[in-house]
Image 1 (cartoon, rainbow, N blue to C red):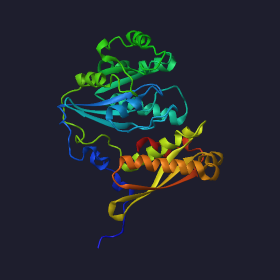
Image 2 (tube, one colour):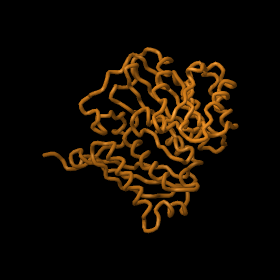
Image 3 (cartoon, helix red, strand yellow):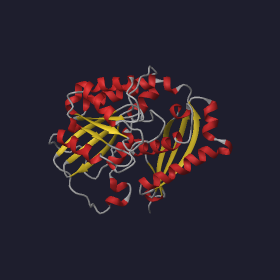
Image 4 (cartoon, helix red, strand yellow):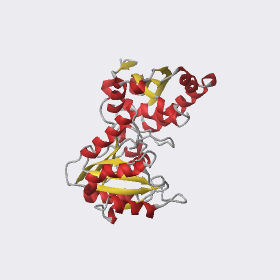
Length: 330
């Protein structure tokens, strides 16, 4: 007789999860075999330039958090694109910006490390914003990698955008990048995405694929769940709280013969006053975050998610190296 409850240590959820374990769109394996080229592509840019939106649009799945709040990406998150040209493994890096805070310094290092590791670089620039010190700093960071860089001038669909101003800036600071590798796009509306992919494939070498063709991300199940919960939270909270919280998955258990995954997760904040705001009056906020997270997770996984979501205080966690290192390396 099959046991009603199966318990798994979180480490047993460590493998990347293919499309077939999420929605049923790949159920019949109706996809075109990927071509011979392979490249790891580091996505670099200032906070809120549209890097995560590009990754989600290119991957065809919500791989990375998209939020109007800057600096929400904390890890090097991978999204995988397979086409008849080959496989591109995109790494969405944290927005590169000026800050001396410990967490932000670690985020900057994540971005720099990915520039070194990748065969290609995708530099995303928000054409609605003026070129400032942070953009100059980001361009300087990319200079040594200009020969393998494609530039995506994003948000061209928005009124008042300045793509020609951005092109002039690129010509001045990164003259090694040819015009055909500077592409106008709208990541949100899927404009110019194929042109960016084509430019990246032109740079990509022929090499064995890094992942099976049915995969669209290498994220572990626990990390995927934590990012969904964090995304629902930060898009409902204001002021300093979105940057002062992280999600800790403390336990996961399969129940009902593998048809349901029970998850205990904690939204961790730095102060008691923040805890009250995240819980909300009559627990209204935490209930909403939980319900909306479950709705989104059910679109991703083909088994039911039962989420036990709580809030706890971890004082000054952004100054604690063990926690920061764990978050950076998840």
